[in-house]
Image (cartoon, rainbow, N blue to C red; front, side, top):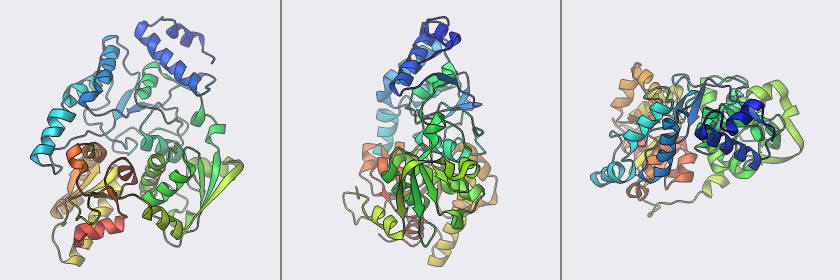
Length: 424
């Protein structure tokens, strides 16, 4: 693996023992994946996946303190994944006790470490850092050092930035050194599609369901998706970006996709077209029957599959402003049609703190509150990690949350019907 004289000097200790260890970590990481060199990180900001002060993560906190003490802080300001707890989200006394005393008791001290390392804002906690209101939206061609899977796939696919699916801690290492190993999705060859996905559905596919089907089929490969123009058109407007946000998160969690191309829509597909497709690419045809097959094969982790849902989460990854507004209208209309005034199942919409602040300036915020829906900045996955929450019958429209927890997946239409009309 080739190193420049400057990089070699850092590895040899020119900037101290701690920076030498950071560089050694990146070099070993690159060599593992066959990288030929290190390339500069060029984005304005970084994003870290490790946002939660989970008590058992003592070694991580010790590592962060070593970096702080040595002055080896991030060369970029950064955002970080969502906070794990919000007092406004329903939880009983015992669940709160587990959250605050046994799980996330070090949250406050860890957030202080993050500030010292380079946190861009005290409330920059979201998995969707690329939303306009947050202020961490990479440009096309930017080289990133991110790890959050849903953010990586969005940045690569929708924004045209370049980032590998790194693990947690590697993200801060790349940001501190200012370099990342050059392999995989950072290279032109690594961004070629080895799968052609032909969407032949009669109706617009549910984003989370379509992404799930593709992710489980192609796994870590790059898909080139055809047939979406009739629903998405050829422009990346707010509605399409919200759709692709959820679609990509499902490909990344139900499989390991770090990049997808949508014909005539995503930037590289518009620029290069089918030249992005590698030789001998495999083909996967998706129709309504295939999506139904995929959905029907999801395991139900509830102790009683026929239980009435006790809680509903929408927003994993975090909801955009467009989604908050459209969901507000849909919930209002659903309640009116059912003759109800408030949702019949405790329902939590999650979004970035910066989006929440802007949303609360609009007329929609008061309207949403009237429906009984709770608006939160929480990470639903971290909530469900509480062993006392795992046993609850929680439903969600997120395939990511379904994959990593005991929450049960329902389509958005099913979610809307259940929270406004009730029933199992």
